Length: 224
Ligand SMILES: C[S@@+](CC[C@H](N)C(=O)[O-])C[C@H]1O[C@@H](n2cnc3c(N)ncnc32)[C@H](O)[C@@H]1O
Image 1 (tube, rainbow, N blue to C red):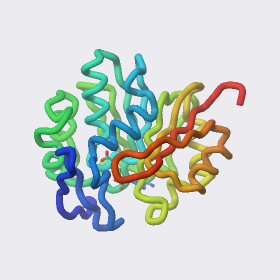
Image 2: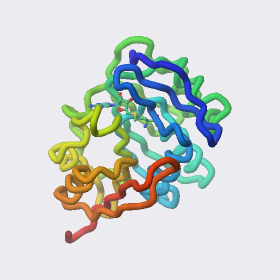
Image 3: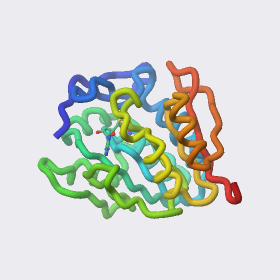
Image 4: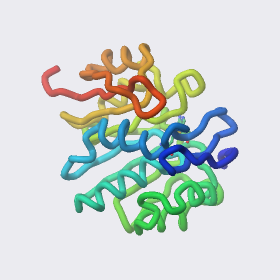
C-alpha cells in the first residue's frame, strides 16, 4: 500500500493527497479537479469524444477517473478506461479524497472503492462500467496497439519518477494511441516534449492548469 500523507484541499474545493515515497502530491495543489479537466479531459478532447477509450498512467487517488466518469455520464457516452498503478493508496484515502466531489456518487466509483483491494492483487475490474485497473508496473506491461483515443500521462514529476517519461516508454505509449488519439500531460519539460516528438506525435504546448505556465498535448496524426 502506498505511504500517503495528509489529504490536501485545493483552491477549487477538490482534494488530493500527499505521497510520502515520491515526496509529491498526487494532483495539483493549485486545483486537483481543475487540472484533471484542463490538462487531461479537455487536453485529450475526451470531453467531446463520442466513445472515449482511455489509458491512464497512473491511477493514483482517482481524481482523473472521477472527472472522466462524470463527464461521460453527463454526456451519455460510453467509456472504456484502463489504468496502471504499481503502488495503490488505501481505499480510505480514495474515499476521503473523493468525498462530496464530482463522480463520487457514480455507481462505478462506489463499486471501485468497495472492491478496492486491501492487499496485493493483480487487477480490479468493474461491472458498473468498463474499467480495469492493473496493479502493476506499467513499464513491463503489454499495452496493446492503436486502441486508446486518449492517454493521460500522469506520473509523478519527471525528476522523481523519471522512468515513465523516457523516450523509450513514451514511444511505447505512442504505439498504443489510435490514429487521431491524443496524449496529454501536465509536464512541459523540454525532454518530455522531445520524447513525444521523437515518437512521431504532433506536439502542442498549451497554457497550463492553475499554477503552471504550460502543459503538453500530443496527437497521433495519420501519415506523419
Ligand atoms: C501523479 S500520481 C497520479 C494521480 C492520478 N492520476 C489521480 O488522478 O489521482 C502518479 C501515480 O503514478 C503511479 N506510478 C508511477 N510510476 C508508475 C509505474 N512505473 N507503473 C505504475 N504506476 C506508476 C504512482 O504510484 C502514482 O500513484
